Length: 283
Image (spheres, helix red, strand yellow):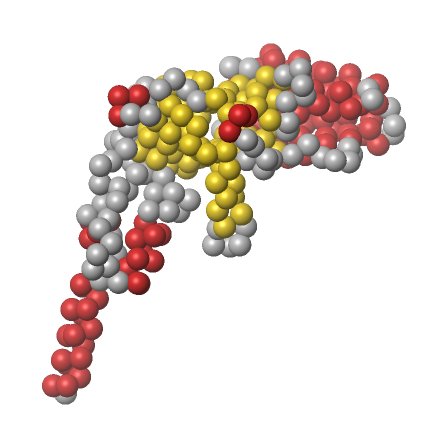
């Protein structure tokens, strides 16, 4: 019995000694930010879209925003990106293989110095991305500033290094995460019915994210649905001109509800995709 009791005690002491928390490593996670991202989308003459992001840090944030990235699903070069004032382009394509095996690619902007970071309750506009694409719903991540973001590697076991890696992984624990609009690839083969169906799905996703909001939002979603369903049926009958008119009615309703029941994320997501479809209906 004494030997068994001693063994249990040793196991408990060993478990207590293992480093498992940020405090154990003497670090502070960079996820103490609460923010939202608003975006506007402009069509450029060379068939590219210009995404302009505004980062709005909440008064609830406990750290200044130091880094901001957006998921992309098209190739991006640094020349396709413009930083906001006091920031710089950190990367035009960080690829990260996630635990489930998928690969996430993000573009990254960094603050140049502490004085230019986005403080709690403040906003910063002017993060731009210019690529040939269609707007889709993408992930964003933000990291806050702390002077305790790195741990001393000395005396850290291999198992603890794995724990530390997970703690500092911005795609797991070490960032504030949300949804915004970013580039999806333009399909190589145009399927009009498929494009309208994709727009219907995006509209429902926008509603579930709260981008279509307020009393009567369900009725607005149904009204938008009716116009898209009608356009899809017209496409199936080969009546492209009729479908274009129905898509224009869809855009008119978006414009009428902008700021009332649609935020800019929903407005630009749906409007730009609808305009792309109208362009293809006439070709």
